[in-house]
Length: 318
Image 1 (cartoon, one colour):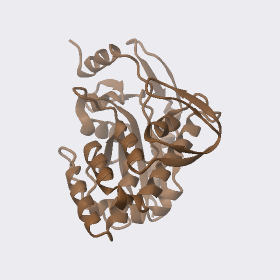
Image 2 (cartoon, rainbow, N blue to C red):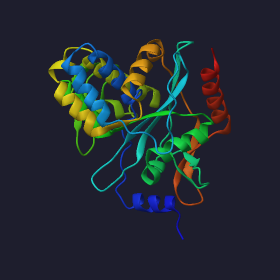
Image 3 (tube, one colour):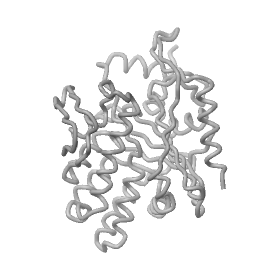
């Protein structure tokens, strides 16, 4: 008899292989904080955003976070999912943010989507399959178990919603360090070196490219941050008011979190320096086909131990 995760794998293996979805560096937690804080003095805008925030507030099942104390170190798990009609999708973007406002330090850990993990039930699977089977709760619990840390908060966004968000703010301008081309079923584009203006779909391709970048995945993370920061600047400017209806509709239809309005504002205010100096962590390892015939990324024991120690040390410092 097949396990739940074997069933998920069989279902996915019948589908056409998709390219990895966009792995946003800070994803929606930062965007949410910027939107909410920028709106607090905007009268009707605040009311509109408050209603939107209430709409996408979704607590974790069986886990009610304690009130966030002032200057408290904390973890936030960010998920970018590929949800479609009649398809729950996978968590193809999984990032753990760790903040310590006392030391003004913060780290971001982009977890490889094909990384083999052991879920709370004891089964082994790819970490992005955890969302397909057990939703946010299963993914959060698996990351907690894998990295031996507590994660009270999460933010989840449908990846196509990020494309809509870029379009809602009128596109973004980035400084491209090197020219490259992008070609998939939705977009064929040549990205020139230097400052370029991007639509939502173009920003998605810009932030997803890895193979042509001389820095590999690190280069992709740099471009992801460029796009996110550009969106954040737009949200902190007059576009928030002029495009408020579009922005809130995009967020409401594509975004869920258990971060309330007050906690979002606190996270953004207390960790501003941490956001600015965000230190990326990397998991080393290798990928190969395991005995079950599935390709996995296997993290090295040394890299995992170092990563866990780095996160634990950051959260413990005062």
